[in-house]
Length: 487
Length: 138
Image (cartoon, rainbow over all chains, first blue to last red; front, side, top):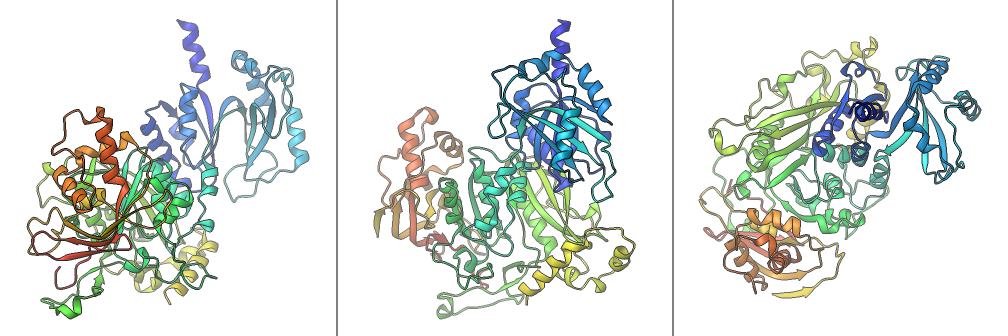
């Protein structure tokens, strides 16, 4: 009994190499996938926290490793860890101590192979890479097969870590890992679904990486029914359909759904006649997964037959920055329209208070999600005044994750993931979504975005000067684009 | 009304009866049971969608069956649908295929959805139903 136990324990050491992107979302995605595939993965919580893209994990089966790799968009690689150390001599020592039984089968003559060296926080020259491969212990790594760079049977990775991103990289790496590649992540899917070549886009279309990430955190899978109540051009539906889910959406914007509005591409004068959400899905061969887009007001839940229907609600509600947040109404009581007026009438819309959008969204999820179904949505915040009490709660929904994507030094959006844990019928009618502290009480998000000085408690200028936040460069860009778009 | 067959890969948006099965007009202030909406089609199309028995079996318990039968009839595709669902529908491939056809393949391109109580019309234009109310109705 002892031998197989030991073997399985040794076999269980893997290293995840994350891409350096959306670092705050790594663990949320990983945990969602662990739960989705019901696999057993453990890691040392202490090894998290810094922005290092390397995470040592213990996984019992190689099959489980491949499952995670088959979905994750934030993982670049997962390798079976054969050795690691703070220096090359420590790495070599570690390789010598590794059980040869896990290595030898991969050295056989019949298997072609390649080596790759990848480093975090330093650009390495080709000659440096060649030199480092020479440092590896040739007697331990006794390869007999042929080298094949294009299509090897096995790929081996030497991974170097030069410390926290953005800091001056030291002369030598402070961690080095070596192992056999088991699985790649889904970085290729991000390239496949890039918005640059998407048929139908608008100002707020979600980029491919974040869309796929949302589908993963929402645990969207084959044969699911998924809705986006603020569907826009359907960029989130594309990501969900990629996983074999059937998708639908609603939007209050009549012109957008009919693709008659102003195009978002700089050099395009008017929208083409065949631009539609359907066309976006067809572009990737996913047309069969598209159900419908309905022009509707997301605040009107009675538009739907009252019963749980959806496996996931994946959405990006309007923040009122690049598009206005609207619902039908006039703000005046007792409006009457004559019959003549009703023909082809586009109803007047009133501003939809952001705080209310999110409460409505949670109530919608509580009613229409299946038990265990997930709601994934973006919540924009003014970083200075944000606190956890700003995130709405609902007795039927349990919060799973809350990850931040900084948009500039003042503004970020947080991806909130909730799971339905209690049937809606069990709660009292009045016991619906609540917010302890309304983040948008004093000013609309648009006001906070464009006129930060007028919002209370703002010290963003000092913040930047003190160097508390270091993402200024890209921000200016985002802000000026938005300003132009909004005239 | 006419039905035209439409090949696979049509990019034109059209309303599916699956969606119709979920929509109501209970958003109108005075309406208490705005379900099912009557379909008054002017143009219906049939396209080919891959048959996925697992998805259809998953959807069936959520489908309001009488509403689906009525909708299928109103667009001229009601033939062969049983009046009530049998218990072991998952094993009845013929039935699943028929349901797949009406839920996923028969689509309304132009027409109206009509509130059963007030007669209020919700237009389906270029395949997209417009469920917005006017400001005097909210």
